[in-house]
Length: 115
Length: 116
Image (cartoon, rainbow over all chains, first blue to last red; front, side):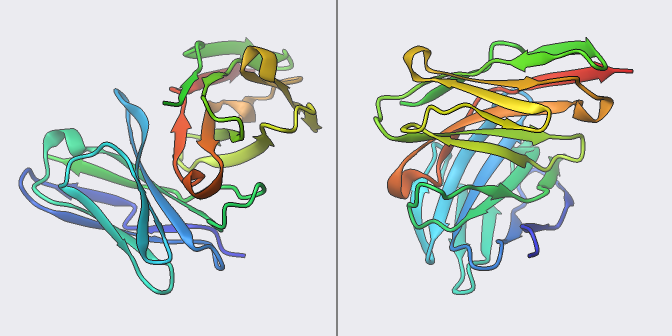
């Protein structure tokens, strides 16, 4: 079974631009969660999508948004980029069915650098 | 609010030594899930283990073992006879049950260096 894939793997943008990151979950998984990892703040939860609906949201400004398509693929968008948005963005997929055996599996991440 | 504390920022051991990574968590939920992930330099978080709050049984998988103690809110991870390939950042994570399970709270991670 293929794992979680994220594209692109690396991205360089300048302040003020916007960026879109993509995540394809494991086949059969309907939940996609996004996390931001920085040296200063560690791993922080951004949001989770399940069946094309945002189900959970972290404490990030409205510049961070996402969506999920009917095939469970998800995109994350960051508008008006700031230097502090430089981070590794990780996507995790799971069944999302609230089962006690459910587990999040992570992709390789997209490393975003904002200049 | 949930919180995960990994007090050990960095640990350095020599190959074949045993090493224990500590994890202490806080939650008001009665049902919750605990995880350990390994993050090698490549960046991808590799799932190691999941433990449900209602299952305090310890687990051993090869050189890895986990000690879950609800009374002390701890979920410690031990690597026996460490190897250079074990060098990585290890994260402990906590999530709620139900529809909030997709929102995990992570500790700050422990960087383990195993020297030959």
